[in-house]
Length: 208
Image (cartoon, rainbow, N blue to C red; front, side):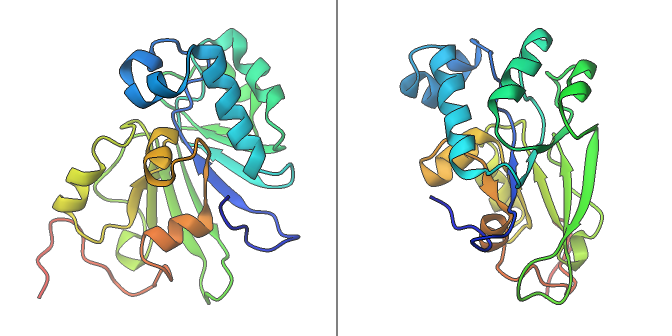
């Protein structure tokens, strides 16, 4: 179970690529095929994993590819306990999804306060990974999905120490062994601890 910010404080969570109702994902993602007998079992396990850590007063960001059939968006939304759900549009999402979430956009840029930091953590969210984002040279974080974790090792080699990561549900499972979202605290810990405001070189800049 991931740590929460405080016992009584709301927590920020991130995920992507749940693909609720998508039978094909079991074929394309072998770990899901091994863990789930069918799409209904997958949906139930992902929803249970989300509800186990994300409490009603928390905030959840889904960075694309929420569900497969537009007619079932509301069905899955009703099964999630969290009240505040923000969605960044993925390539499989449809405009009607906007009716079932707090915000629906092509990208999101947020600043979050975090205990022990004298500045807010800047987080840029898009469904697809990008090479450059607002605030990247000053500790800004980029979160994305789409790749299901398969590009992470190569991206780490291209840009060691990068402050970006795939928060898709498959990559979180690869990192933690659990089908669940990842918290802001976990993201900060994995991407360099204190979310420093010092300037950080970009992926194609020479360092001394």
